[in-house]
Image 1 (cartoon, helix red, strand yellow):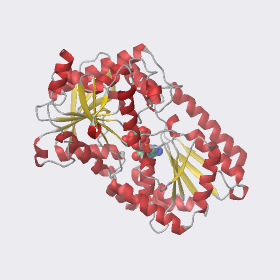
Image 2 (image 1 turned 60 degrees about the vertical axis):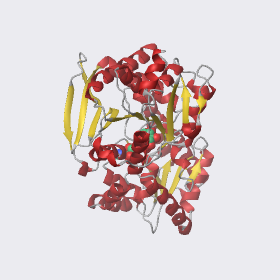
Image 3 (image 1 turned 30 degrees about the horizontal axis):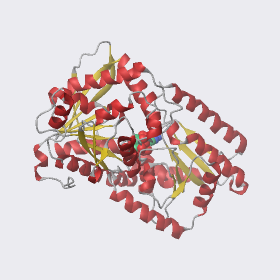
Image 4 (image 1 turned 120 degrees about the vertical axis):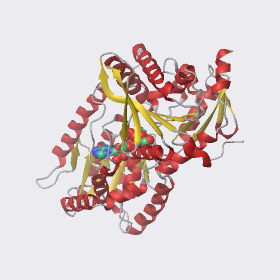
Length: 486
Ligand code: ADQ
């Protein structure tokens, strides 16, 4: 029997332990500046009672494993400092220079250094050393993202028998690229110590299953109901599409600050159509391709110059990694070149900003934009697509232009889906979005808003937790310990 997705009455009895590289529980949830994921996980911990464990973001000379326990608006967080070498090799190295590009199909940018792999294993083992003694027999454990893929193995080695689930926030790569990673088999083997592995989309899950079933060195078996067998163990897998906190976002949009930002943006657009892009400065987000597509649009449609502008809000991200420094320089140059080429004395085609905004401000900005450009080259889900839709005025909604390579495209087929690698396609989609009649905009928006509501982040959270809770034990803890010993 597959585990059923019902919530059990005894939910309140056991604690939920959330583990992620960085702990982003907001100190004041009312401030509304944290991302949707942080808010959802904080709410999950308030609902289930528990603990959020991760790196403090601080470095120390010598790792001690000393825990800093804090209460953040009702959520207990447990933070540990790392050594500078850990941050270099585990975080900047293996997580962000090796795995992130590989998971986003960018093997051309992936750095395969033995020291990064060693630092990754060492730091995950350090986290497990500190975390294992905090775990009580009834706890369920939910590990997040590519920084911590082998964490279940490290916890099992320390005798942890609890249910452990893992959720990957990024895509999973095709097998032909994954095998370029030295020790790919070992990494995937470590994931078979989880009880449940979740992905955003069927596409990422199918790629994971394809690796397990088709990679000769693994030779795994596909079992019914998305279970997998390999390395003498079984693991349950599933699709859990993440979403935003819809009600929280609508509240931010309707707040005084949200409305004031909308008014300010509408006035500053001064009868021009505004398009918006909101993305971390990351090569996976397709920012250069987006600007080139927009340049193509300005070239193809001279009559539209002066009538439209792009507000591109792009906070600097991972600036310690050289590929991120490179793309920053290239984007600066590209935005400057396009502005230099097309701007007029009272019009600039691109407003390019490297800063963050509060959620209520972002909501106001999205609402003022006639077109939302969400064109990543590859993305696990993409929450900006859902935020843009949620922020729209139902009586006069804007149009979402969405990359077919974002996980969100699996659910949001009513958006204008584009191939972001083609500047002509981008140019055509921008034109179509700007000219779309009101009736069509409304019809599309209603259908997209239904999806946004149906994938609210609380549904994602409850679905994952209840599925994990319903998995019969022992599935991996004991059985897999026996397999390892054999
Ligand atoms: P990200 O790659 O960070 O997330 P995304 O899903 O778009 O991408 O989330 C970004 C969040 O940051 C959004 O909530 C957005 O509002 C916020 N943000 C971006 N720019 C901002 C700015 N200038 N000011 C304020 N806030 C800003 C990873 C994966 C995604 C996946 C999420 C969640 O890469 O594919 O959707 O995790 O699983």
